[in-house]
Every structure is written in C-alpha cells, then in structure tokens.
Image (cartoon, rainbow, N blue to C red; front, side, top):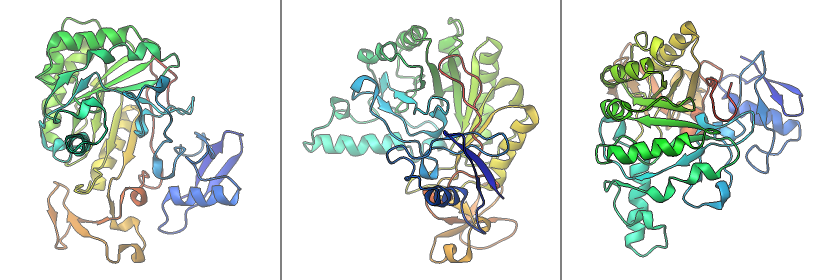
Length: 375
C-alpha cells in the first residue's frame, strides 16, 4: 500500500513499501534517495499531512525530535510523546509535573515507565549521583510541587501540555485544594492546551465538581480493558455533560473494549500497545475496533504505537527467526503454544513495530482552544 507525504517545501513524495517492509523504513529510504538527512538529526524533512495519504511524524519510528525545555528550566521537559506533537508549529509538547510520585491503581500500572524511571534515579541519588532533589524520595512518596505552578504562564508560545506525566493529578494523597490550584494555574495560561490523564476516575469527578469548565483543558482517562472502561465511563459521561472536553487513552491496550457507549461522551481516542522490557502484546483486533468506532462516529483517532510486539502476519519470514513468539487470544490470554483462533505475535522491538495500522498511520487530533490544532 502506497503513502503520499508532503515536505515543508511543498514537494509530494510517494512512498511504496516493499513486501513486509514497515512504512517508516520505506519512508527513510525514500528520503535518503532524495538527499535528505535522517529525520530528528539536524531537522531533516519535516512532514505535513497530504490530503490523499497518511501523516508521518518527523522522527524515525514515530518519535518526535527532542528540543531544549522552555526557558531552559530543567524541571520542565520537552516530551517525545507522539500525541503531544504539534504538526503545524513543528514543535514537541511539554510535560508539566506540579505533583511528584504515584502509586499503582490498576493493571495498566504494572510496568509503569514513570515508576521504573524514578526508581532508577532515586537509587542513583541514594548512591551519591548528582541528580535533582526530586529524586530524593521514592516514587510512592506523593507530594505537591507548588514551586512549579507558575511555569505555564512563562511559556509564551502556545503548547500542548501533558499534565503530570510522572504522576496522577487526582491521586488520593493530593489535597483537593492543591488540585484546584493546578486548575487555577491552567486557567491563567489560556494560550496552551492542557491534556490531563487520570486513572482515578471517581476522584476526578469529585474534585472538578465546583469548577467551571476551561475550554483549553481536556480531561482524559486511561483505560486498558473492559473492566477499567466500565469504571471510567460514568465519570467521563458526567464531566462531558458539565461542559468539559473529554478524551480517552487506551494504552497499554490489554484487552478488548466496547467503544459504542463511549462515542457520545468523548472527543478524542488515543490507542497503543505497551513498550518496555516486560511489555505485553496488543491484539490487532483491539486497535482496529477502536479505530473503526471512531471512524463511524466521526471522532479523531490517534494510534500511538504497536509497542514491542507485532502480528506475525506483518513480518517477513526472516524477521521471525530467533524472535520471541507467543499466541494471543481475542480475550487477551497469552500462550507459547499455537492454537486457533489466537494471533501469533512476535517481539521485534518498538522501532520495528512502528505505528502503522493496516498500512497507514492514524494521528488525528481534535481542534483545541490553546495552541494550534492538530490534524
């Protein structure tokens, strides 16, 4: 299946992967033949959506380029998260963490990247490494960081801001009064789009009860399977009824979800598989069901990644040799033994697995209040 992409110069390139080749790999080869440097190294070919094809991120494997933090502040990080990238401004989003620490709340937290990253750095801090003071305490020590509340006001250029990428804004150990201070800080920076993501669904609804909706703040919930989706839907439905923008992150996708009850109450759906050393595979039917539900309802859908595993059908025979393989049922059961109708999944790594779903990339955004909208 061919793709068409547009360079910032306006030139249109046709990218045709050979059998078994990932679209990202085919794109890199096409750009190389055109004389462009690799993307993410000194700029490269920044891409815009083409009306007759898919949108491709300006970094190999779908990872946006990193840039210095706003104002040089070391406590603020430019984020590599794909759904934060601003295609119009060709700029990464920002992770803003006015709270430090978290605790596990459901199965999606089992291999939490934030927990693992902070724990490594906390151990290094304890052993004398010169790291920021935030790593002095273990990750389960949840605490507010009020000295960071002013930061969004200091960023002049509109940005997409991921609120608490290393915590949960609605954690039960954070006082409601402080959470409302975070909302006040967001209200004072209307040039940005703030994306909140929580696994504490009921607490979210409780804390926002006295607050007026902010048009540039999007309340998101993280779900991984049908049980978590069933818990999250009532608070999301009520938040939307009260006028808040709502969205859902289905990542890591660990089981099937019926999206039909969600469609009237959300404005965006992001889906993706799990990455990391202990990543669990995502059944292709789960991702396709989310995509199809969004298409039928006219909702923007963003497929972030396959994660570490890719369906064997997407690979050349030579790519499967020596790679860990397991068989995944539609319900999420994993087995080392072939059985029908389980799908064989091969661990190829996040870069090779890529972000293409049925041969194309899906990275639609809703139109947002702060910053420029996505596509």
